Length: 255
Image 1 (cartoon, rainbow, N blue to C red):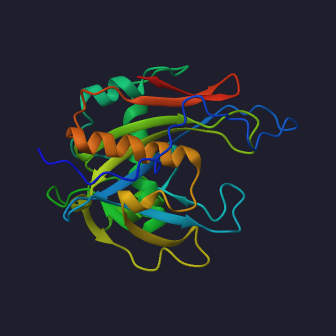
Image 2 (cartoon, helix red, strand yellow; image 1 turned 180 degrees about the vertical axis):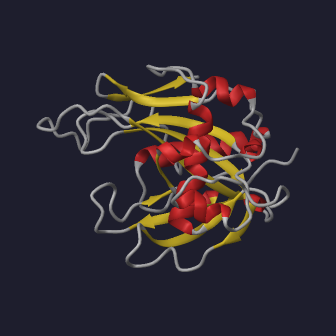
């Protein structure tokens, strides 16, 4: 097995033990984290893997101007969308650990949220055209997605990590980070990214250069996990990290 080109030693600083109270506002209520999901699209056709990242609009309250992966909160419609293929059983198992209300639907909804949010924010359709046009798609985004004759294909997804926003922030998310190969993109709607959109630009960057972008600390940690998993073959058997606040510092646990 070939080894990917390694990033610079300090490119992806680990966050285990790093203070997590930067940006904390004691006047804010301690919000319950909202279930969310992000998608890392990986292109491995060249010498070094590249990842797709988007720059958030400066007008947004949450992480303005920062580079992130497409993603957002789970919506009720994610429960009702038909799929092709299922998540690996180890992924499902890990997504039901360390949650207050484990549910067999939770992993599926998280995976679908990652695909839907990627479509909403980038115009990219991740899935398969091998099964015809999905029937009875929920109204809204999923109906538009299905009109392109694409089924969301969950067995293409890898689970990279999970992260929970520290307390006393204006928004808090419990986010599952998935990865998918770029050949899972079967279509694209143009004009989704632009100056008035949530993402103002999209960039494909080699892993060794991605950390040079202006991005949240947790995003750098996720990139480090991705690099490690790519080098090891993306096996679903490997433990998956959970990053969260413990006593004012980031803690890396394993699911």
